[in-house]
Image 1 (cartoon, rainbow, N blue to C red):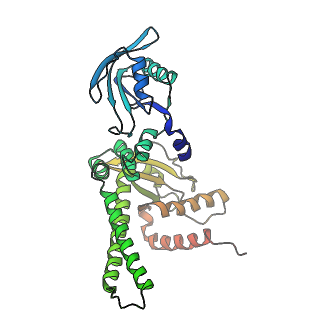
Image 2 (cartoon, rainbow, N blue to C red):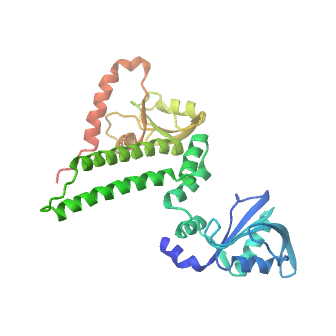
Image 3 (tube, helix red, strand yellow):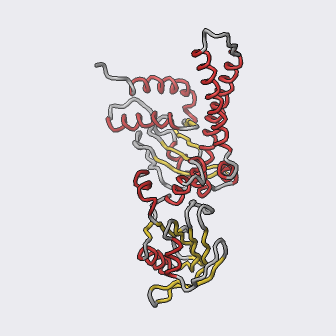
Length: 336
C-alpha cells in the first residue's frame, strides 16, 4: 500500500474533506502539481490570489455548477507540502460529486484513504506520531482524548520524548565503543554515568508504556469481562447495563456459548462489556469452546467482573479453584 502511494506521488489527488452527506457547506481538496492549473481551468475567475479567499463560479463546459470560495496554498506552505486548493461549495451531494468528477476529468484522481496526511508525512510536514494524532483528534469524544491528541500534534510531546530516549541510547553506545576500541589506552570512562543513563532510559520507557495503556483506555474504552458460573445472572446484568435485550436469557444452563459485546458510557469513559460463557465442567464440545473463549477474553480485559448467585456466595472460593483447574485443563498442550 505504501509503495503504491510512493509511486503515485506525482499524481494530483482530490477528495471531499468534510463529512459525507447533505449540509450547508462542503469542502473539497485538491493537492499536487496540477492543482492550480485544474482550478484555473474550471473557475470563471482567472486572477486568483494565493493564501487569500477568492470567490468564483465553477463550471463544466457551459454549465454553471456552483458559486464557491477558493483558497490556494502554494508549496511548501500547505498541509501536504504541495500546491493545495480548498474549495468551499454548497453541501448538495449532486454538487459535491459534480465538482469531484470535473476535477478528475481535468487531470486529478480520487485520493486514497489518508493520502493527504500520508503526503504531508512524505513531505516532512509531520512525523508518523503526528499523523496518528490527527486521526485521534478527529476521533476524540472527550476533553482528555482531545488534549492527548493536541499535545502530540501541536507540541509533538511524544516524538520529543522518544527522541530524548534515542539520544541517550546513542550516548551509551558511543561510550561502549570507546571502551572497546581504546581498551588498552588510558582513557577514563565514567561507568557509573553509563549505568545511570541505562536506569534513566528504563524509567522513561516504562513511563511511556504506562501512558500508552492509560491513553488507550481513554481512546478505546475500558474492557470488562463478565464471568461466573452458569445461570448466575451474567446475561441479565449485561442487558440491564446496556438497556437492551442483547444477551439471551434462559433457565437452561450454558445458554451463552459465544462472547456477547455491549457498550455503555459512564460520564466520559467508554465501557466495553463482554458477556461470557458460564464456567463449569461439561461434556458439550460447543460449550467447551465457549468456556475456552471466556479464558481468552479474560487475558484481553482490564477488569474482570465476577457474578454469583447471592444464595451460593459461600461457593465463591471453591469456584475460584475450579476456574484454575479448568483453565489448566482447557489450555493443556497435547503430548507429542
